[in-house]
Amino acid sequence: MKENPDVSPTKPPRRTGVERVVSVLLPTLYGPFQAVGYLDHDRGVEQVALVHGHIDSDQVLVRLHSECLTGDAFSSQHCECGGQLAAALRAVVAEGSGVVVYLRGHEGRGIGLLAKLRAMALQAEGLDTVEANVALGLPVDARDYAVAAGILRDLSVQSVRLMSNNPAKGEALVRHGIQIAEMVPLLVPPCEHSITYLRTKRERMGHHLPHLDATAHLS
Image (cartoon, rainbow, N blue to C red; front, side):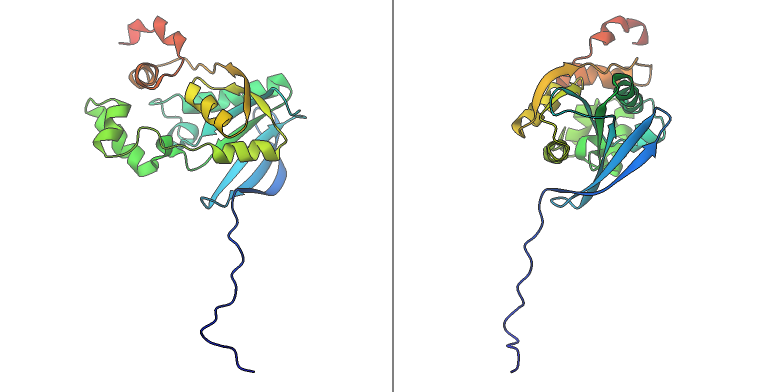
């Protein structure tokens, strides 16, 4: 019996959400972590959570760290991202347990690496980080935290002590079903290269950065 050429074979349903793919011990300068790798089927992006110690379901010390190649890998002083990542890893180890979720695809608050560099070029001409994104026709913050919530649920985390200065990040987690037990400040000392950027985050994006009150000398 010949197959009907007009009938297509049934395609398997498209996967959605996050899938745990691998877990492996990752020794670091800060201490040992279990690197848990995930595939975000909705965006086709690989993600990783660094887990230290035995984590419970409630009040877990957590950092959701947005990918920042310039800050994390190149130690850029334009932002505080590299310092925050290091501080979060140290804090988790000092706590004895916790999770750092490294969110790939969040470069430049979600606009991508090249767009971020273009925005930085506009900032060098006098625009602030919000104005630069708008001038490029891009959103000020395009990040989504659904994948972060999915990863935390996979790790059986229900409520977190979130290391962040950004209230919007906590609000996003709550919308995705993860409770916030506490917002834990993660303050990195500013420098002359980052102070304008940080002041813009406080004044225009609502970040809690009280330590900037003592930085008048950097104006």
